[in-house]
Length: 195
Length: 255
Image 1 (cartoon, helix red, strand yellow):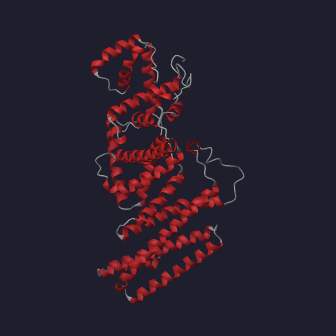
Image 2: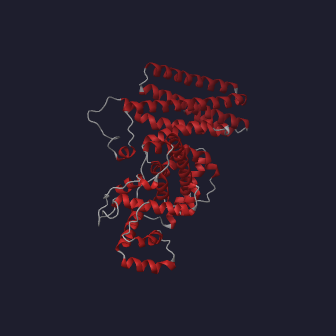
């Protein structure tokens, strides 16, 4: 359910209070911060990496980054937005280094257009789209498609924000999202002409 | 190349407009043309409907909750970070103490359960729970006990570290205290040190003893508390605050 303006004001006040207490070295406050945002940031890590074990390590790295950088938080962006940015950047660094390692080993990049889709997908005509099926389909996307889709359609970032975060042009973000959605549709519905 | 999902290749140019419409970013000038096309093209209506559904469903994907052990592990890493951080001593000591206390509370409650004899029926709590299924990471009880032992060791280290810092402050300011009072405080600290030593000995011979572990942390807490009161006493004595000193001494005599 969407927050009312007074809910948002109260949440902002609470978050400012938590930040102040964290800066003062109050560990209980940091636990509150984790309770408030831990699931959100863990989910970002889980979706970006597709691995629960990696996400568990990453969410800890993210909160350590937050601990180190809390003094630099000026309150210009909402706390959640600031934390989200740290989370996405930490995850991207991880994903890039992992891809770099893999590339060095196999010397292969993403062959985005060679991916096979089944003749018929799990999303039947006339049926509601099942959330679990969508999540499974997202997991099958090539990494660059998946990142653009997750950041835009799941995390709600704008293309210029995705561009800044991923270090790509805004137009590239749009193009990746377009391809990701089309690819998801093929995975979910099956190959065109055979539905 | 990925094939267009629309039946008519001519529909391809409308696909981008359909995406824009899903995002609420369709240019007003393009809207009439797209609407006219949608009215006559079932394939593009299908594309719009599917992309709308994907977009709506994606926005509703719920968050995943990490396992509780993630916080336990994170709090240990934070404690180490806080201890290593170059900050004014007093802040660092307080953080280290609070971290140690958090770790003790977080892990002691579970470690004794894990060390207890296995229950008759499996609880299935880790493997069958949604969190367990989502994470796919199942830690054995043995691993968890080792993990918890490690956290207790870290908590112990933080107490010791904080105590060392407090002792340093006390040593540097001991001259401000009345010699008889300083001797009494030293005697009390000696009693607590004895309790700490005995608890450590007991843990060596009975590593699984909850009583020994609890006694150790209780003695460490007492020592920290007495040292903190001593530091506070030194501060008020230096300022010549007799009322403040009496208040602290009153508290000390009750504890």
